[in-house]
Image (cartoon, rainbow, N blue to C red; front, side):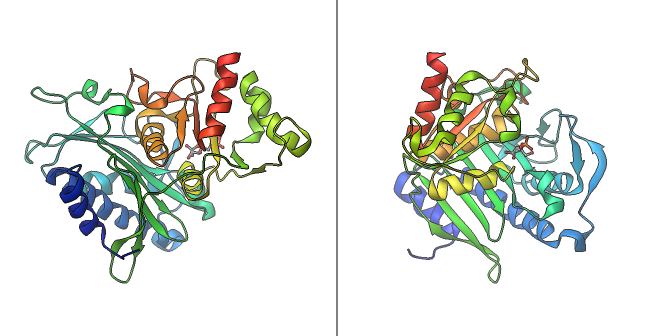
Length: 333
Ligand code: P6P
């Protein structure tokens, strides 16, 4: 594969496919630069006084880590002046962040989870930034309602995983590409194109400690995986759970698997743990663009019409045949 930079890739994609208007290209390059900056802070760890909690809580009532807040500020500061955005939304902020009047407003909306998996920061396990891009609906001004669009409306989606490598993974609707950060040059370099998830797998990812709280279709699916070769699946399965969605999904995009975070009966009114707008939707588009599937157990995640910015959703995504199977179990129930 030719080693080309992210910039060249985006320019050539625009020339070939016309998916990336110049304002969107600027947005993606700014987000990539922000991820480089976040990677530097993440990689400093205890040396950078960025570990531990910030003695504050986010909108979800979750203890914020210092790095959560740093990552959120980096993304806001990197994007607010460029003229490509009308507003931003983040897991770390209650309401939307409208681009201040001192800057020109653009036509895009940027949503992000600035540092997902932050419980892993202090134990040096991979974490990541997830982002999703929508077009602002016609009309003057911008409000929270402008963000409440189904995942099928996304114009770009991606994540950056801060692991042994810092890798940016991106789709604009023409397949999935991966870019590895070359620290010597300080630039993201194309390392994989046309990423494809195998339709079958022997690996499932779920937090098994919640088993007694799952709905019957999920129990049935996981029990059959655990029954292995002698069971109805006729093959043995392996399990992985990194408790960092970006790392689990990166593994699945790289070698297949099925990731599940289902509803559980401890909080019956809560559809799931993960957020629709800036976790499940961008990851669903990436997975579908790589030939996988993504449902909430009953329908494609990307067809869900959001009613709240921070709403949660049940998630089954990855190898197509496995997601279809566990989804069919829900329909049978
Ligand atoms: P649990 C991280 O906090 C996160 O939002 C996802 O990245 C991850 O998949 C999940 O929660 C882990 O949840 O309940 O296993 O700690």
